[in-house]
Length: 326
Image (cartoon, rainbow, N blue to C red; front, side, top):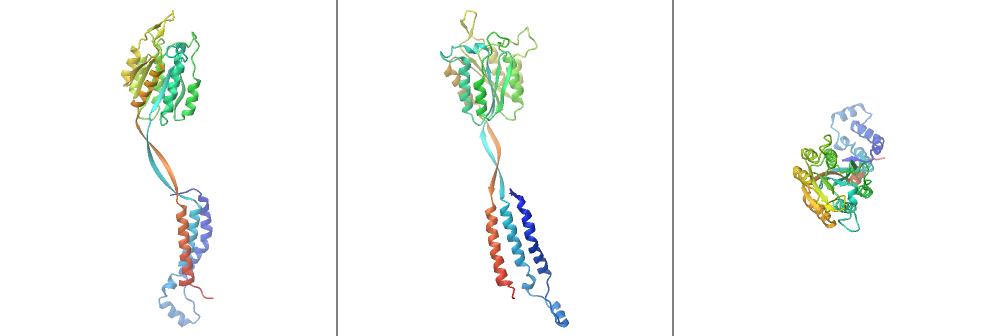
């Protein structure tokens, strides 16, 4: 039980002082007579129960005041509930290299636009999950940490765009993206953590010529150590060569990343396939969360009724049992 407006308790102290004095003086009061012999006899003869309990009306008045003040202080019961819900921590990782502008999956929408639309539907369909967003090309960038504020997340997703074609960032650093995702998800408290990686290319940042860069399989080991499953999606019908022809994508590393972390690999060659992949992930990834919730139940009405009952007893005792004669 808690009091949401405890300042009213000062009123109880002030209002109860007269009643406390009457209780004290009533309990100490003895019959007074002038004659010495009669007074001695009165001290030796036990007083009646009414005399001994003369303080009761004052006590009832004090309890009535106290009940009213407790009601004014808005007494509430604090009840703890454990709400069970199904949700996980998910980080969406989107490739934003210039090749994501290809229209091989749809005549109107680019690979990135299709990926964003599918991701938005996935986010909308999992309101109880904490979902984040990471974009990558040459470098990985955490756009939004895992959050349940999906409205803000969708706005950030809509703003994601491709890097400049043939610019300094127009590469595909899958390993660095997975590494940053592992670091981000490691700090979350959920028992189930998932990375959904969508790319249309092959790793071309971490090569034999750049030993300091982290490769996809090494980054996958970090995910495995942190208990993060990776679902890898290869979008499109392949990569374009110098003549503009599509060449099948080498998905060996993506398949290895998924296998190493207990996830799965998917090839999505059109818009329907991307949605099917997200639907499949939606079926696979469900876990039970217990969230504490505090409910405040108003209990002041009980003290109002108690005050009415005590006041009724006070009136009865004062007018019938301990009635004062003029």
